[in-house]
Length: 466
Image (tube, rainbow, N blue to C red; front, top):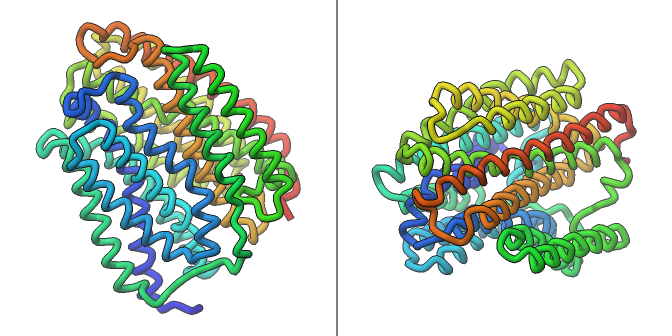
């Protein structure tokens, strides 16, 4: 199907608006955590679940919905996701109990998975090969801008209009997107012409395995025996899932890409480890700035914005640089820089001056920039053109799963040291210990990620998946 220039760019705007919503929902809510704790009387562990449950739902359903979109039609799934995100955002702002709030957050994650599983594929379908790099770059920059503006805007909204306003804004943006879909995409639909068979068994095994694993992490701190059993069970189910998908005729997730392409495999694992070792940093720093340092949400947001802004600015240059020098080595350098930032964060304490934290956030953002764009370049360059959509979906899954693992680690540490109590001045010492231990574990994970990245560099000339 051919599209007019105006039609293509209207679709690009619609996709970018939807792309903006998802990182914004995570990064902006970190600044509202103390307000959520007071509104719903949340203890430290349940407070962590307000972020984790959204990521977990997105990670569980992203790949299944990407597959279903190829069968049912991508616009249908995309529109359903945007509508669900709007409805459940309003639900989050109106509910009065913690369980209903968590349920709405979970359903927000399910809705986001519908958007994650279709947005990139729609852009690839609409724009010709010669324009794809440009529009995918625009869409990626929207992710960075959303992550960068989230803490600042979330802090302002929380400080002046209340935490509910974050969800109101998300609902308003959702309404605008729906209007755009009905206006400019009403006669369009995209399918991949694939078999009508859907791997329901594989999707269920994957969802159960990931859910049990993350919940097991959260239980290790308070009931280590139950937590250990759940973690082992989760790992066992994920292993069964990998075996099953390798033998399934219509897999929901093609693990053969990992077996046939070592560069793709190691780069994907490096991404998984990187997100597992970094996503929880902003969560812990938001607690540090508001509970330990006593800053309000507006000020904390203005401080935290430094890291994603640094990443967004430098990513433009590191992306170009990865076309000229070995992108795998750039990504490895990025993880080394992240380890340095995490080690510096171990020096944080109640009286740490702000002029110490600001350069550390710049170093952290520089490490993210050196890793993210070059690593994506390696992943997308390691596969043939017909596998670009699958590689993109795999990258999203690694990101979401890594972010879920990161919050699982955070919940485990908080449960172990702080316990299931509301955060107050009486537990500030324990909270500080939790922050330090979390950063130690994250630094150790990054060192493992450096190992995978270095092995990947040695195999940088491997044959792409045919």
